[in-house]
Image 1 (cartoon, each protein chain N blue to C red):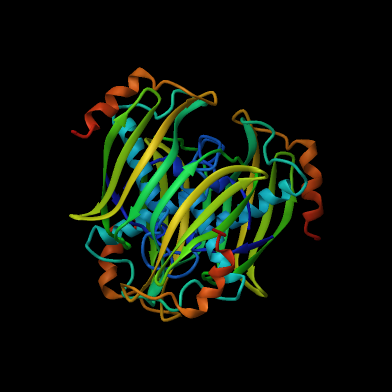
Image 2 (image 1 turned 90 degrees about the vertical axis):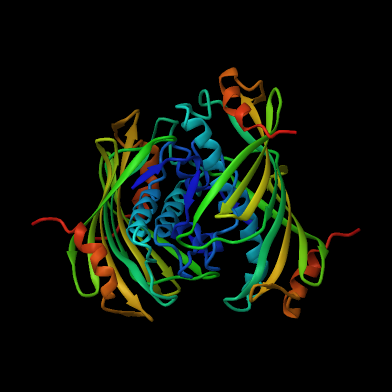
Length: 127
Length: 127
Length: 127
Length: 127
């Protein structure tokens, strides 16, 4: 997943605004679904919700840079998944995040729908 | 309506990103409703939609500035309203926009609900 | 220029937030430069500034849609350019905007640098 | 620090987009400086940088909600500060984040300027 840095992504410091790395990672997560012709939700009342994030900001990006987001699955459970997402500028790592997603349906934690499982399993990290 | 300029509002040019003036104006329009304890929609399938914009960018704002948005109604019609919104930094005008809003319900242009009319009439510009 | 609609682009109405069409158009303008290995500025104190916008919102886009931005130049002058930018979802036009850009250097309206001219001329609309 | 939820803050899920809680917290951090008539940077080449974040998403907010951000300092060191920031909707906690800030000057980790210390010390949490 390639991402170009535009003016909207930068701030007065001249570099990418810190919260935008979370946006870049969300785009990459959504693309996992879109690439297979799926939406990340089944209906208006269900979907994956971000529950916990641990993020390290290791470098900075500026206007015009081309970034690359890598998404891996650390653990896949009945109702949740723990992902590792990293943003690179060429070989240099700029951002690394562990993000825990929980599947919610009608306001309750629910089993991840079967159809979504084949999207995650190829991304599982080897032990 | 007062607005503070934060990092998120600025871009690598060090000033407020141009599209964010439209956000500031939308906040001011929403506040017209919120201040009266109303929401800008009646339900999920209706609400005001932006149809046309004419905007002039006259000055720039930077991190930490306090801006002021002034909202006036030029014309109020059965299903639409033409607003004049201006963003100031103290006495200096930075942005001026005429925005045409249309009320949509279930995908069709519809009469503006009666309860919203008293929100607009006090903002009407004198001829 | 292709653009995918992500969660960040949508609002509680379920469709793309109106001001984000301006972002999409800005991305397309920046790509005109990036594609040629150039930046849209010469230095920190110069660059193209948006002076005037006339925009029509003709349709809506939702999560996962792939949009297409087309950029044409209506007139090219010494210090400014008038562009026509249109956002399509397949054959359907969603957004159309005339945007006037002015080149500023050290706070003053200035001649557009020669090196930028070949970026604009191929985009000129036939009379 | 009070924050109103506007359309721009929400996404197609009808609630505040997850990365925007980081923006709300950044606004609250900037206000710590603005309220004292200071800027969060000394010049273009220095300032506080977000290095690490641990965040829990505990609830959701929707259009028109008024949120409240509380900022406390857990530890203050020579060149860094660890903050606890929490976002509430009335008494309900929606978001909690530990954020580590590091002061950078000309690309190097540097001592936090003396003038900024009195902004942090009143926010220190009691042991």
